[in-house]
Length: 116
Image 1 (tube, one colour):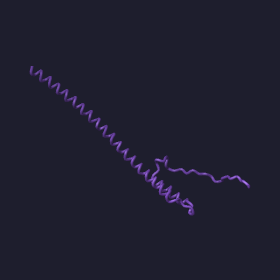
Image 2 (cartoon, rainbow, N blue to C red):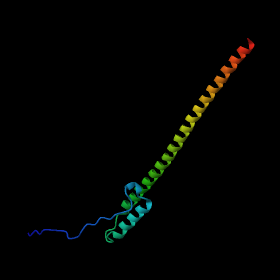
Image 3 (cartoon, rainbow, N blue to C red):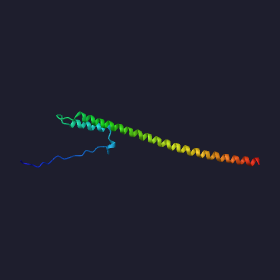
């Protein structure tokens, strides 16, 4: 039996995309990749439909999770704003209470000096 060496003469190219991380991928990117996968598949041995459906379900789940993360981020921002507003209100009430106490003390001192 003769064994010959196998070497590859094709060059590997890397494609650059505009996305800098996986977080930047959108549903359009997924559809582009899926379409490219369908165009490049062997017509005599196509990709199993269950595998394609599983990929679509995973993407749908990822999109839902991303939307949920955005919603939670919005809620967190609103809660931070509410918390800072509440703190400012408490400080204003405390300052007003101190001013009222000072006026009451001054009024009580005036009443004691005028009645004497």
